Image 1 (cartoon, helix red, strand yellow):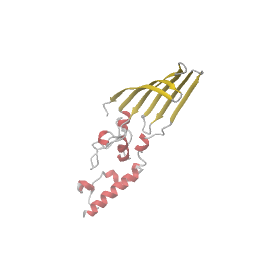
Image 2: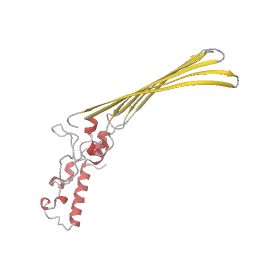
Image 3: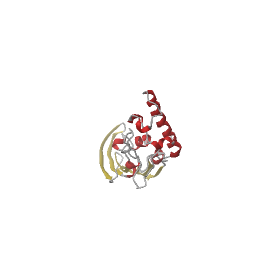
Image 4: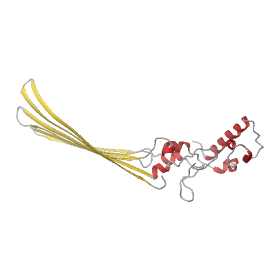
Amino acid sequence: VLNATEWVELLTEARDNAYIDAGGDLTVPLESRPSAYQYPSEYTNPASFGEGTDFQDAIFQVAPTQRYNVSISGGTDNTQYFVSANYLDQDGIIKNSAYKKYAVRLGTDIKLNKKIKVGINVTPTYSVRDNVNAEGHWGSNGAVLSALNLPPIFPLHEDDGSYGSLVDYGWGMPSIPSPLVPINELASQTKKLNVLGIAYAEWNILPSLKFRSSLNANVTSSSNDTYRTSQA
C-alpha cells in the first residue's frame, strides 16, 4: 500500500513522463500544460503529504469467531431423547459486518410396543446478519474498491466532519467516495427464522420386514431492514 508521499511521487512522475512522451517541455508551467498532464501545484512537494491515510486499514478488521455447543441425551428402554443448542457469533472482516446464529435441536424416539416406534425431530434456527456493501463498484458504494482506489492524500474526515474523498476533486481523477460511507451511513440487517421438522412412525411387521412412514416440514421466514443517512 502506497503512503501519501509515494502516491504523489508516482502520480507526478507518471504525468510528467506522459507529457514528455507527447512532446511537452517540463519547463512549461503546470497551468500551461494540457489538462491531461496537469496536477495541483502542492504536488511538487510530495514529502509534505507525509504518510497520509490507509483506507484499507480503516475498513478491515480482525474477525474473531465464537462458537458454543451444549447437548443432553438420555432415556429409558422405551424412550430416548436428545437436546442440543448451538450459538455462533462471527464478526466480518469489514467493520460493522457480523453474523449470529442460534440453533436448537429436539429429538425423541418412543417405542409404543414391540412392533411400533415413533419419533420426532425439530430444529429451529434463527440468524441475524449485519450486512455491509463490500463488493461492487465504488459508484454503487462498494467499500472495498473505494478503499483500494482512494488516494491516501485524503483524510478519513475533513475539518467540517464530512468524509475525505475524490468526489468532485477534478484534475482528471475519478469521483471515488469514501469507503466509510457504506460502512457507517448504510445499515442493513437480515433476520431469518427456519424450522425443520421430521416425524416418523415405524412398524415391525416381521423380523426382516419393516414399514416406515415419515413427514417432513421446512418453514422459513426472513426480513431485511435497511437504513440510509443523508450522507449515503
